[in-house]
Image (cartoon, rainbow, N blue to C red):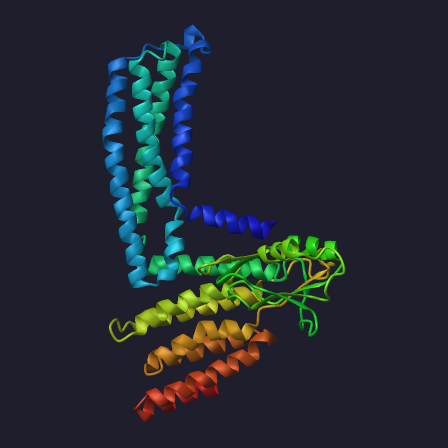
Length: 417
């Protein structure tokens, strides 16, 4: 249930309309709830409210908030475009989900709706003295919220979409995915070492990437069919019609029909593009794409690639330091088997693109060897073979790309350390 909640909550955060709609409803609720203060505030606490000043304040809000909201939306679109052009298009979902920007847009639009509805209610004598006082207090609080939100948003929009900010967002999303995976890599299932050879193969009907594996649903299906289920894909796996999705230990004797097969296929959610949640490899790929773009001849920014190598070291350090929770506890989904991620794939995603595109740059290659050496020194046995392979492959690429023998000899010294 945790993985399902994280997945669907993340998809909602990527929708720009969610928070503005919620804040608009909240604003409308304040306008209508102020009416109930007419009968519930004792007269001794009532203060005389100048209706004209209240109308003027509401008019000022209604005339300015819509303009500010349009300006905010334009600035956000510019930031989204900058993030795609300077970093990687894969960072778009992270920029869209920026909390400060979404909150700012929500406050600006919600304040506009609030001021229009409140003005309409006030001009139609909807409030008595208690409601007028409540509305004044609510308007002053709303005005203060707008000012504070605007100041925070101006500070954030100056960095939103910039390369360093985008890299930080990708790194945070990747670290979160690594922590979630490392704490519960099998999602309550048993480890899969090899799939059934003669089992009942269930193939995908969709084209896209695996977003979510509903292991609870698979356990229910396995119990209903009295069988064992092997999951033959992982988060981020690319699925096409005919590709193996899961395998049943044997063909069920009862309960198996087209509806059950469809239910089994729907237990694994497939989307058109990869997502960061539950997919550590995607975060490493996005970081490497930033480095590859920086190393392209048109940009020629090796410093960014070196920065990304530092990010990769932090990500593998996070992988090494995060331990699986309740490792010795019996898994709750004992009829479902899931494969582990292969650490070698993580290293390929992280370092192969940089080794390929930066092969001719001695500074990048030296930092790549240092980064791999640092990861190898962490003492993680699952890293050792992959580190050795990546170091040798990177040196082999550099020997082909570099023309100066002195650079090759210097790089060889770092390889031999």
